Length: 142
Image 1 (cartoon, rainbow, N blue to C red):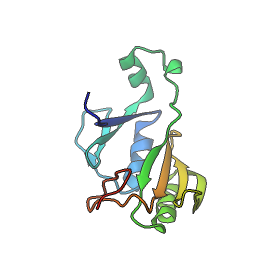
Image 2: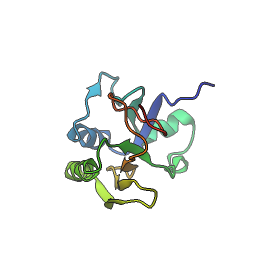
Image 3: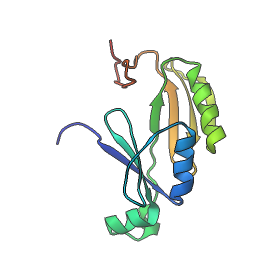
Image 4: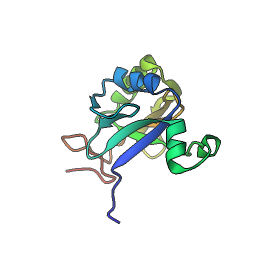
């Protein structure tokens, strides 16, 4: 198996509401089939799919699908952008879980939850410079 993530699919309770949230953040949808919403990212895609349909596809009762304890990360180019992104997410309907603040390791971050509770970390890591295209790499791009 090659080391990569190609598609992140978020199980959502109301696809219209969730799509409106990501649209309000300024994300651009790609053409998809009915009942699926997708946004192409840098090197991967974020998909929104109804929770009940995802459970059916996996072969689990919807109550067993659960929510994974994880965060989705969005890194910024500059420290002040963290607060700007958190404010935009809040205006789009997110719940800010942690306001922007400095972190013990030298970075700056905050957290929000989208309308379905998927947690996003918005961070500036001064040790991991983004590429010109916005790609993140743990030790940064030169």
